[in-house]
Length: 127
Image (cartoon, rainbow, N blue to C red; front, side, top):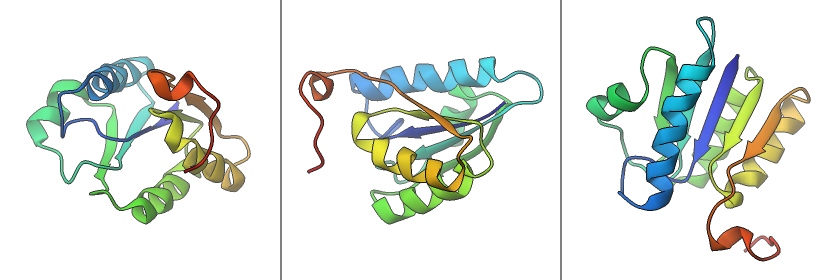
């Protein structure tokens, strides 16, 4: 299984959302199986330390891209990687538009939302 994990940030802070997303990264790498791969895209991280990637994402991590707060880069990379993935896991509700757009380029792509925090307690609207 080829999986794309789309996150707002994962290593640049120690908050609750980045912490749980690191756990999801590790779990996805364990779940994809011997022939599977995981791709990581992070909007707000400027770079990744190799030690962080090694600790949370063993051999199944095929690529990790830090977008440095560049939303256009995130969307382009989501579409590019999404064309070759089977599953996209959205780490935040505000990343759903990028997942939806990736599905337009790969109709077989299924995307899942990790829903947490007050952002999902009220109706969703674009800013």
